[in-house]
Length: 152
Image (cartoon, rainbow, N blue to C red):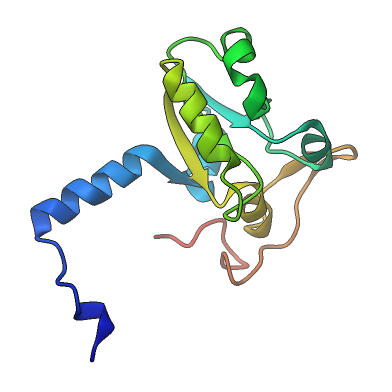
């Protein structure tokens, strides 16, 4: 039995609608890095982790707003009309999902960054720590060592 085809693939129109919808809700670390580097207007990247995690390291230009504080503090830290990208620790954590939901409920356009802080670091992208801006070498299981993205 071939399991990949035990359920037929969706028709092309349904597949296109599904994948387009996913891209409307999710982004990845390479795309966020490219948008931050290009200084895309109206983009606000929100780290939804707690203070100890933030202090350990965070994305450059990110706003620190733990999930529990979003309803009370979003308006003071995130301008109306912004597109918000939320992140938390990584794929094993749904904190960025909860944060994205909180922003959506407040009326913001929002996406969740797949992979979170873990994959940002594993892809060799810059982070801010107590000692300043730093980078680790890219993990070859997440990104080519010689490039920032997989060119997908």
